[in-house]
Image (cartoon, rainbow, N blue to C red; front, side):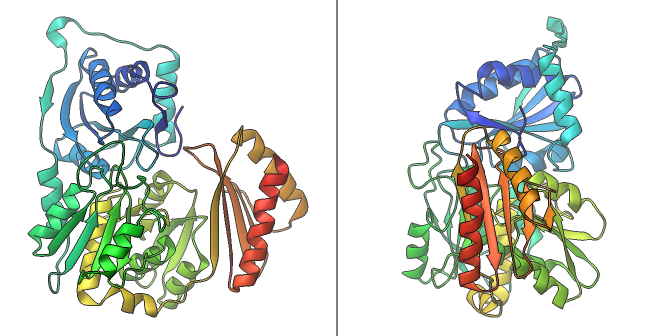
Length: 434
């Protein structure tokens, strides 16, 4: 039921009002008050109503913050002294999808044990209704103001910059508001919330952010910011209009956050360049499974000062354990105010890395076959998350997506031709195994 990022899938098939009602009833067994928010998808309205009904009829109070970024919801749990939070969102997934993600007061997503407890109650058709006098109350509040002020307080700009924020028709408007309060000149793109995502696909990638790149390049802006539908992700564009890869963003944030003896948490598909750069300043990279929930779990360890994923999820554990796209945005603007991003990136030499996602059927069965084949053909194989093969001068990773019917393929080498060769070999393993 739960993937690495909660429950996600097509509305009316995987994600239904019945499911949202059941999650509400199951969550109510361990929560007296719950914060609820949603992204702009139209289906989020009835899914929220169903979830709230399950909570309230079980005696749980609800703080409904309405249309809100996922990190706004996660941060509001502690801010409202609630026991849990729920985001009704499919994050970067396409418009027909929706989902449900659960949060602890620390900002950390529900871990595996907590997700399994919810799943078991749903399977058992758990329901503990209360009498009419014990029904939970529904309070409507604005969660954006607290989050915005937290963002403003988190940074100090050497000078205000000109920033273009591509909200992606999502819920990340708090970024533009926070930057404006910091004195920046802010222009927005795709700022009208619309769950159909008419401006561009929800996931911010080099391909989907072409309009942002062109706008930044043609203007006097110092950088551009892009969010996905619920703003848990953040990607960026330099003042020259160049899209910054996730690995290079991870390197920039890691080098700023980690000092001697400290660690950065990142998933197994992260470029070797991040580990090499951290080693140069006495820090180190600790690898996790792919998924912000696993990065957040590692970030609870005392010497881990930052965690991130090349897909655009960034976690500063001293602030919150949720991936906070708006926080990443203001932190990046802070870095750019001290030294332009293009100049910082010029000091970093990326390694050629290749990534793709292949749509497949029965991904779990296919991954089992792929793992058996890889273990039989290669010597240095790690199975922390999918199969990662170290070839000495290169590596590749094959893993199933936690939220979609896809097999992710990643390959890297220090030589472009070698990277292409390994990538072709890795992709062939997937296609040949189907």
